[in-house]
Image (cartoon, rainbow, N blue to C red; front, top):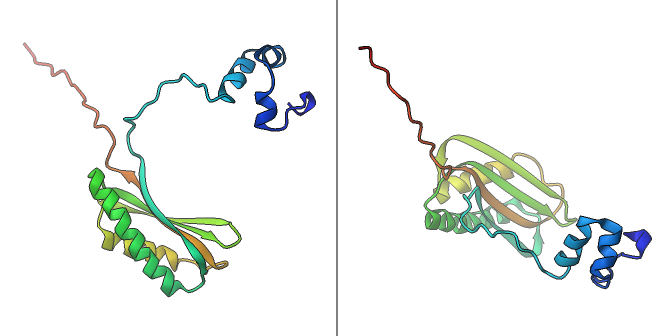
Length: 164
């Protein structure tokens, strides 16, 4: 695209459909439509939930784990509301940490049973927080719950055999 003078979305939008088809074949028609917000694929609004999360970006970076614990309690409470609203539970708790230099780290723990309680979410998130020393001050903390009990149960039909 650079060789054709296309460096930005606006550059792409300024090209004709014929030009794009000539240089990119079938993809040219796709580029022409997508840069104009035209996309006719089916929207699937009833997908199975695979995770639920809550996070908070702070106005000032946090450097004290004690303050981070307080924030994690609030985040766990928000997460519990979402979990209860959707009537789900999960086995894997993930702590997301974004540092002041915008690097990100995640730490997870998978349990042998489903949980949905804010006290358990908080305890596991706190355990994950202290798993390793902080690299820098923290600008964002988040907790997510994965490995949910939302999978569609498959019905297996078995034909029984009788001896006659």
